[in-house]
Amino acid sequence: MKNKIALEEHFATPQTIGDSEEYFTADVWPERRRQLLDLNSERVDRMDACGIEYSILSLNAPAVQAIPEAAKAVDVARHANDALAEQVSAHPNRFGAFAALPMQDPDAAAAELNRAVTELGFKGALVNGFSQIGSLDNATYYDLPQYRPFWAEVERLGVPFYLHPRNPLNSQQLGYQGHPWLLGPAWAFSMETGLHALRLIGSGLFDAYPNLTVILGHLGELVATHLWRTSHWASPDGKNPMGVVTEQSFTDCFRRNFYVTTSGNFRTIAMRNAMEEIGSNRVLFSTDYPFETMEEAATWFDHAEIGENDRERIGRNNAAELFGIPS
Ligand code: GRE
Ligand code: ZN
Image 1 (cartoon, rainbow, N blue to C red):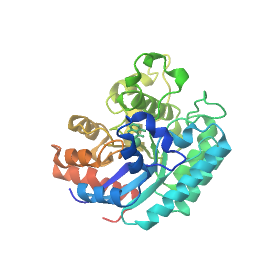
Image 2: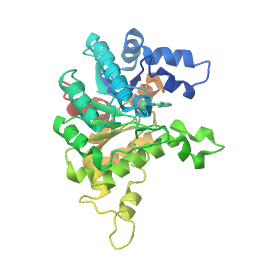
Image 3: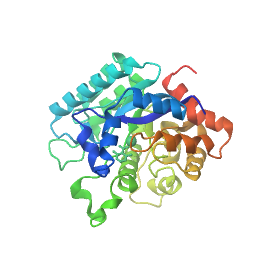
Image 4: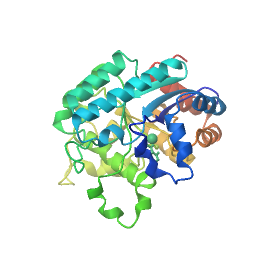
């Protein structure tokens, strides 16, 4: 397929590049480092070779979310967004942008999203999970009441919010002790991000702001696979004393307010499950470059056993519609 759109495609600035180093062995890191910092020919050449016409770029992880000083988080996000805007403007037909946001300060995050969308032409935001506020040992999630005005602004601007993974806090990694391989993309990223998404649903956020759109990568961060059981047990319904009351069921909310992407999860069975669970109009192609290769993502997707209509939708049309990209 020639004209795919991809939307979990990362870059880094000199200030944030260090956050990605721990995920690579010393022999491949120089190449990944170069790819994260590159927003020009290498990236565009790979997109051409892989049939990716348009990539929406976002900062690496956890970056802004791991800066406990709110004022510094505001600065780093602003600088990254300005740097990204400048690069995108050099390739306006090939690149779009998601804003990094200083969620440590909800008002500043809303203001930065507004600036990014209305002044820089960004397509939405990508945020790397909870924020550490005031201390490295703090994890603040966005279902909390102080974020309601922020979500009101996201809804008002009408842009998607991509909830991207990060690891749980060091002090919350008890179950991972002795098994560092479970951290990061092998398991912890999805557990952490799926948990955060379910907190958003259970808090009634989408009852209050029914037009919010949240995007999850990795074919739904395990939420799509577990949806029936979560929905079945999350509500009180005379059965679960710890259940929560939301106006729409978890299943309905997931289908109405969420999209999932194929980033870093190149498995046809898992994609088909997501297509059936959330609808093939809410699944979007993505690669997770340079943590994965565009080549593997595109080769898998272009040959996956799904119908050609679904391939066109997932590879391009759903994203074109969501982001107002001309077909
Ligand atoms: C990411 O997408 O941000 C990511 C990492 C580290 C390893 C894999 C991965 O930050 O997909
Ligand atoms: Zn990613």
